[in-house]
Image (cartoon, rainbow, N blue to C red; front, side, top):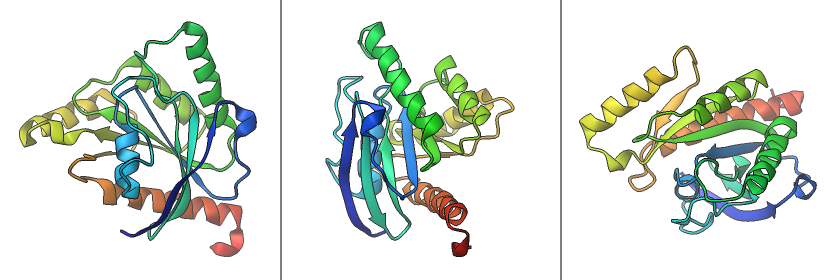
Length: 207
């Protein structure tokens, strides 16, 4: 995989800052400290494009990263983490409004990728979010992160348990490790398929 370009386009504290772009967008979301920044950096083969932090909740804006690669030319969008970050209720509600405003109204959005630490059970936050995305017909993927933190048999058991927790939900899912670069090619393949489908709908002449 060759990454020709990967750079921050803009960081947005409010919806009015969202860029006017014709490129398809892939949104990354998940619980605070789930490994979004690490996965984004691994995908684009950069060490510090998306800034990582040991402090949950540091990402308080929506970050748009413009990427050109052999797989796809698109914008990867890093959404604020949710969950146990130590922030006020007012600030948490502000984040929720910003994220939902992006997910529900952004015409460039072609796929949402929900990250889940493979060592943790799905919570109500994740299942409600998956159902929320499905109700709005937003194409989604569930990506299990930090696979390198478990030994092979432990990892297989955890993945099986998480898939069982999905119940009747049929959301595609895959296993990744930013450290070991596991699952990145498969994730890029999914991104390529979705961006190409979005571009074909946006410009029927491309079909």
